Image (cartoon, rainbow, N blue to C red; front, top):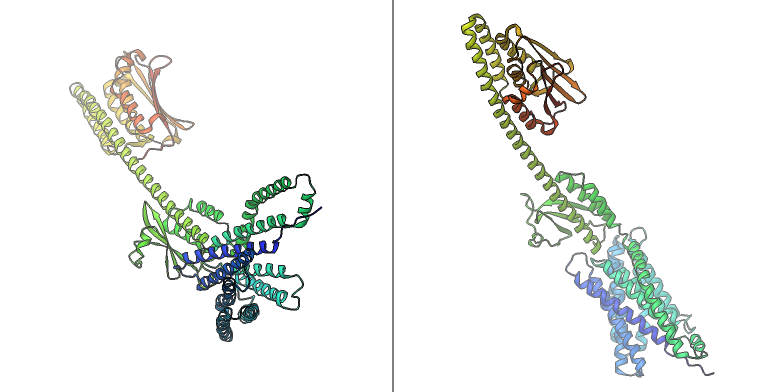
Length: 627
């Protein structure tokens, strides 16, 4: 059976390699131009991007011209060849520009300067010769690059002083380039190892991209580069499946080779597409962690939010945000500054509009609070740290936003506290006004009754009238002394009742028998002043006064669990008579208790076994009202 083999596997690989390199280089060029106005963006990035575009575009053009069957002597082929190797000739100059800052000793700086001059002169010479003697110049290009880069690496790179993100990609670049030269032009040339050499060149280009990924959008570049590279690998696998002779031989032995080929092709494409996202996410994340050592930004923001919840002072909140900026990113310094501070420098106008601004080596991140920019997070990366990348900048914006959110929350909390304080003060003032009004009802009523008693005694018993007048003066001294105090102690209230009852004994004579009882542990308890006098007066007027013969009055103050229980009992006319004319006193007491204690205090009127009435007042022992 005749077997058809699809030719062009090597040409397909070249097309994939050069297309991949061109796309990656274009991404680098676009992101570098975008970051060109920011400090810390190496100029060597643009030079490298230009070299990559020349190399990739020239190589891709050559592959297309070969596919079209153009002769090597064609002007288009010669031009594409010259463009490609011009990029390769200038490439070492860009690499040396990246290495130069790591030459710290004087002799190293002089040596790398000499190597740079030699690299520029050789690149210029090769670029000119490529148009006149293409083959010799093209053969000289990899040798020149290998010699220049080996010398530059020997003079500048030290594992102890060079960052890992620079040292490891540089080492791979030099080794891959030297290996490709040996396989293509050295003693191993001609042993069908051109494919290995091509892959070494691709590896060198890949790590060159990593080496130049040291600017603001480096993480974006790495992420896009990994996707393009993975897509190229997947395309290479697919191309290998469609051009390999063995699968085609097996397919032509089948009954329906074309249908089976289409089925396997669709199956392979879908499998590759399905696995692309899974591989892309993990590879990109691994490269980011390896190259940038990025912290877990989400966890850092969550920790900051939890920490800020317990802070209420602006200085403490600022210190927490400054620590959250410096520690994970290893910054030189970070400071939160008020935008309108008297000693603050003139900030750029863009900051006031909410834009992040680069000022020299510092980064200014605006912080909004209360709907406007009020503070700035001023960040200084420091000389030992590489430039901030976009993910670092997003993290700084996040913690700056948390500072503003916490300031707003603290402001709302303070407003709520002030509002509650004003409401409490207003409530206290209203309460005191109500109490003064209620007590003002008691005082004239009590004075009127007492003066009537004195007037009656003046006619019947002048001596007792004089004694009662003195006692009445003592009563009113007590009333005046407590006129501005809504509360008094149980002891003072009982003593006041003794004096008051002395006056009433002048009216009742031997008919009135009084018994006062007070537990020692409640003597210092706080109760509303003059709370018992209206109850005692009601008992005398409506209970014992109309009763013929002697009457008894019991007054007690005791503690029951968390309540203070005050009782006024009499064996007078009973509940029916009292309910008909309970008078001002009982209503006044109920209103005062409700004003002071709401529903936590009560007053009740009930019949007493053996005749008479009992009034019980219950007051909470642990007061929550303000004195």
